[in-house]
Length: 296
Image 1: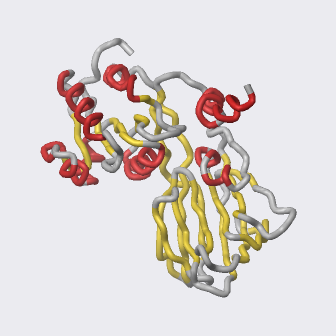
Image 2: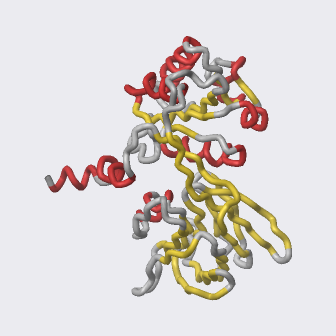
């Protein structure tokens, strides 16, 4: 906060190489950092694709060397990077090159000023809940993944509905004949869960949200439980077309007799906050802006 550059700062840049104009933005960012003597690194694959091979590092080395990460893309790019580097405790700042950018912190016109603030340590870190999803088959744990937004158990596109049983800390809590179920963090409450009819939950709350997808019943509602509780989902189905997805980015095929256990991750997602914008302001200016404009 003294206006001097942090001498230990090393920035990891995570670009979405599929975004239009990402090359120009990346070049601008790398030049600005070099002009201000800020070391920058990138994932090795992205570095090769974007013609910065000297900046590339393998995943484990990258996590060890960087002290702060910047993503170039939308919310999906930010979430992917957070999931990757959360075990290292590295905070992430998202630069919005997408359409909504609800989680990203910096808009493109403000990029240089944001880098200057980051270099001087003029930012806050907001830690948020992450989830850990385990797939059990018989007596074995066969899959483990983490999520920033949500874990989803759902049927395939042309399959019949699932009969789901949800246990909270070992106690049967709900039965859903449905297309699936979303287990979301408060961060994920504004994503798929919201589209499925779930409530918006402030990320400062230490809770986990359960929302059924297209339930075949008139009384199904979302459930909110403590982040300390463990959720177990079992399935009955006449088909094998069942999948578990995490953050809408990774998929794992399930069998009807598999058990999915979702619990609080030992790691936290660390988001960089520069603007001091409140969560309510973010909802009003980004998520609800279209509805507000329509009614104004």
